[in-house]
Image (cartoon, rainbow over all chains, first blue to last red; front, side):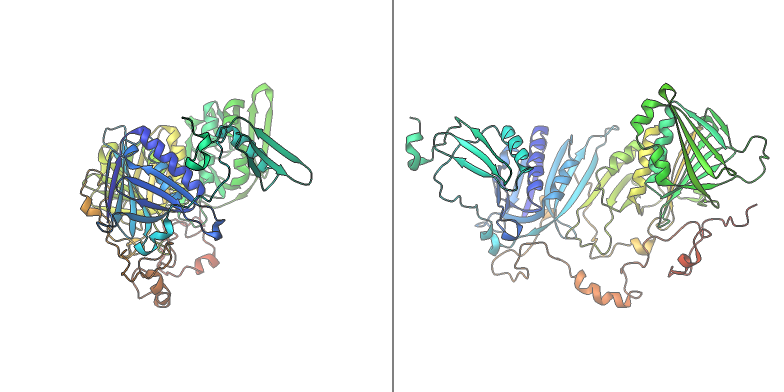
Amino acid sequence: MRFRAKIIDVGCLNHFSRVINTIAKLAKTCTLRLTLDKLYFTLSDKVANGGVSMWCELNQGNFFDEFQMEGVSAENNEIYLELASENFSRAFKTAQNAKAVKIKLTNKHCPCLTVAVELPSLSGSSRIVTHDIPVGVIPRKLWNDFREPRVPDFDVSIYLPVLKTMKSVVERMKNLSNSLVIQANLNGEMKLKIETDLVCITTHFKELGNPPWGKRFTFFVRP
Amino acid sequence: MKCIVTGGNVKALGKAIHALSRIGDEIYIEPLQEGLSLRAINTSRSAYACFLFTSLFFQRYQPGESGSDPDVGAFRCKVLMKSFLAVFRSLPALEKTVEKCLLSLNPRMNRFRVQLHCKYGVVKTHDLSFQECELLQAVFDKRQYAHLLRAPPRLLADAVVHFPLTLAEVTLGASPAGKVTLRSYLEEETEPSRMMVTEMCLSEEEFQAFHIKQETQITFCLKEFRGFLSFAESSNLSLDIHFDIPGRPAIFTVEDPVLELQLVLATLSESESRLPACTHKPVAPACDFTNDDIDAYMVAMETTCDGVEPSPSPTFHTRCSRSETGESESENEDTVLGTPPQKRFRSLFFGSVLSQSQAGTHSFSSQEVLAEDSEGDS
C-alpha cells in the first residue's frame, strides 16, 4: 500500500483546504478512500452519530500535480483510511501560502498520513513543517460499509435557491425552532417553514426550476 | 518607588503584563536601582520570567522613596496577576487613550497604585493590594551553557504557530550539522495513534548565531514560551536561547539598554525525555521534503479478507501493545525503563520558596536547589 501526492498550485491548495475544513466541520472522523483517479471523503451512516452520512468525491487531477498510489492488490487497487478530520484540517491550516504540500502514507510510530509543507522564509532556505496524522487502515472486509449512500426514491426534485440566501433564512429560523419543514413541488416552488406554539414562519421561493431525472420526469427535459 | 511611563512605552508595559500573565498567577514587583523588575513563575515552578525595564524606559524613575537610603534592601512585593492585568486589559484602548502611566509603591500605604492619565484629563487610579515577599530569583550562569542559538523572535513565533494550542510541551533539537527542529512532545500516557505529531525544521541560515557543540534535544513547556515570544516579538530585538543537556533549564534572553527579558524554562531530564522505543520509534527524517522515494513510506498493513484482523470496527485502535502492558508496569515503576516519571519536570528553582509540605511531596531526595536562599537577606 503506497500513496504519495503533491500540490504546488496555490489555487488548488486553497480549494483543497476549504474542502477539508468543510469536512472537519461536518464529521469528527471520516474515511478517506483513495483510488487511482479519485479521492473520497465519506462519513457512513451511524445511528449513534445522528444518522448523518456524507459523501465527498474529488478528482485527483483537479488538485494534485503528482498523484501516485498502489492499493492493497492489483484487483483491489484502493486504500481506505480512517482519520480525525480535525487533524487533517489543522495540518492544512499551516499550509496557507505554502510553496508546496506533499501528502504521503507513512509508517512511523503507527500508520500515518504525513502532510509535509514547504514554507517560504526570509533567508531563502525553506522551512519544512511536517504533520504526522495517525490513521487507521481499514481492512478490506469492511470496505462494503463505505459504499456510496443510495438516494431514496423521490417524487419531487428542485433546484435550491442561492445558498447564501437560504443559509441566512435557515440560520434565523434555527433560533426559533429545532425542526424545519421543507416543501417543494414540480412547479419550481419551495417553502421553508417552522411552526411553534407561538409563531409560524414560512419563506416562499418561486421559479426555482426542477431538474430533469431521466425517464421519470421526461417532460422536464429540454430538447 | 515611583515611576512614570509615557507614550508607546505604556503599551509595551501592557504587553509585558499580558506575556507574564501567561506564565504565573502573581506578578512580583521589585524596584531595583537599575530599573523596575517584573517577574512571574508558574504554578509547577517550571517556568520563570523576569522582565527588567531599565530607567531609560521611564520618563522618570525613582526606585526608593525620596530621601531614603539607597543602601537599604529593596522593597519587594507581589500583586495578583488578575488585578494587575485588569488595568492593562485592552491594549488597543491603552494605545489610543492613555498618555501617561504612573506607578507608585509605598510600603507604608499598603497599596500599589497604578494611575492612567488619559485623554481629556481623565485619570484612572487603580489601587492594588500587595503582599510583601521574598526575592524570587532563578540562579543560573548562562556562560556555562554549551549551546547558543540567536534568532529574531519572529522566527520562533512563526514556528510555534504551527503547533496546536492544546500541545503542552515541545522538543527543540539542534545538531552541529546546522539543523534545528521543533517537534510536538507526546506525553507518555497519550495514545500515539490519536495524536498528531508536528515537526518544524529550520535551517542554520535563519539564525543569527548558531553555536551547537553536539546534537541536543530539550523539551520544555510551550504555553509559557508562547507568552514570552508574544512580547519579545514586539521588541524587534534578537532572542538568545542558551541550553545544555536535557534536564538543565533552558534560558531565553533578550537584551537591550532599555529592556532585559529573561525566561527560564525547566526541561525534561534525560531519562524522562528519553523516547521509549514503542511510542517514538526513530522516525524518518522529517525534513525529507526533497526525498521522493515512495518506497520509503510503504505501509504494510494486513488488510485482506483472510487476515486475522483483531479489530472488527474501523475506529481507531491501539496498534502497539503499550496500553496492555501499561497496567502491569505501574506496579514496578522504578525498575521498568520508560515508565512515566513521577514528576515530569523537576521543580528547578526557588528551593527556599517551596513550603515544607510542598517540598515533602517530592519523591526525589536529590532536588537541586538552583535558587539562593534569600531568607537571610538584610
